[in-house]
Image (cartoon, rainbow, N blue to C red; front, top):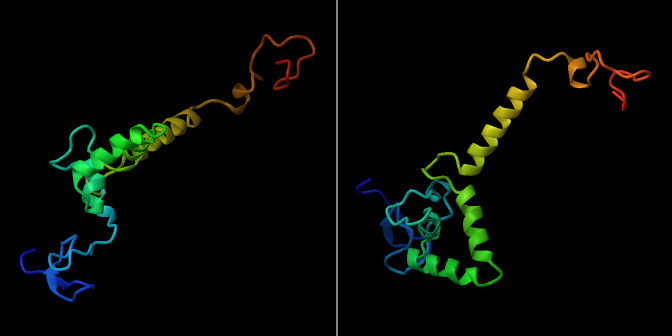
Length: 142
């Protein structure tokens, strides 16, 4: 990556291609790149959410942590937002998030349940021999 540069859209100076802020005019030049949203940063402490938000939005990580702390006292929005981001933001770049992994496991589990070799009549109780008098297989009295 050495030597790759681009022009700052605000001051037209040459800056590094991976720069988040222009060193000349201090403007934010990085767009919200989904590849930058991950929680496995060296600055992570609890779950890495504050480090991920700080890195992706070019904010100081300590400022983001302070923001979550302040939001904790405003109707508990801080812990709710932290938990939601913990579920949504993946741990590694381009990896699945906890929510995606949980949904995939639930879909696998549901597919296994549906994929059992049960005859269609077994699901509604039609194969039971102890049906009461006048009960219709699959009916409300079955």
